[in-house]
Each structure stands twice: as structure tokens, then as C-alpha cells.
Length: 137
Image (tube, rainbow, N blue to C red; front, side, top):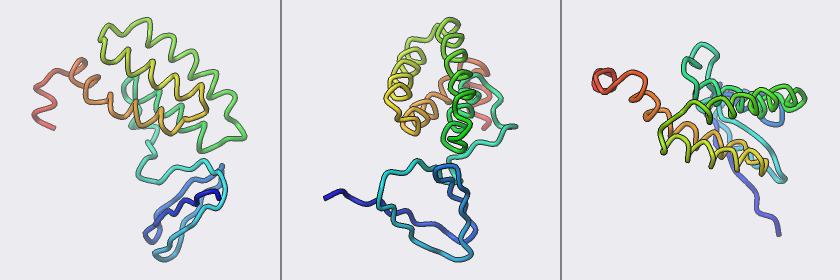
């Protein structure tokens, strides 16, 4: 028997599922009975937040999940960005994380790739902005 997935949403919290945007008018639990690709609003990055290379890569991957009907251009952009980042990053930790994320993308596990990239944000921030900014933030 296939297991189901339950998602709990607060009032007006958006859920992006297979290209559709859902926003309940009250607290609700949604049970997915089959495979679904989705993002909770808390995982969605706004375009103006994509201010670093990894955040831009995250934004591209999120586009694949939010708009699956137009995923081909986003996938092509991901491929170009991945190659550029892999060529320019020197940090072994960032390179290992990029490789791991790329494996997830190639296995059609885009959300897992996004989680990996999100974990790399603090490392990229430290490299770009130094510890002073991190301490102030």
C-alpha cells in the first residue's frame, strides 16, 4: 500500500503543487494520495532575494517546481549555472554540496537539491561577505 503525505496549512498560507497555487481561507490539512511536487510558501524565494550565486541557483530550481509546464528553460538555465558555479567556486564544501545537489536534480529530486543548496547559503555568505556581516545579521 502506498503511503500518503499530509500537509498542514495555516490560513492564507500558499502551497504550490504541480503548477497550481492553493491558498486556504482557514487552517486545513491536505492529504496527497499520489505523487506530487510541491513547495510550501516558506520555501519560496522571491526574485529580489536571489542576490548571490547559490540563491540564484535555488531560485532557478524553485521555478522548475512552481511551473512544471515551463520547466525546460529553467532546467537549461540550471545546467549553465551549475557549470559556471562549479568552475568558479574554490571551496571544497561548496563544490561537494553542488555535486550532491546536482545528483538530486538528475534523479528528479529537485526539492532535495534545493534543501542542499539552502544549507550552503551561510558558507557562501561567509566567503562573500566575511564573518563581520554574519555576526551583525
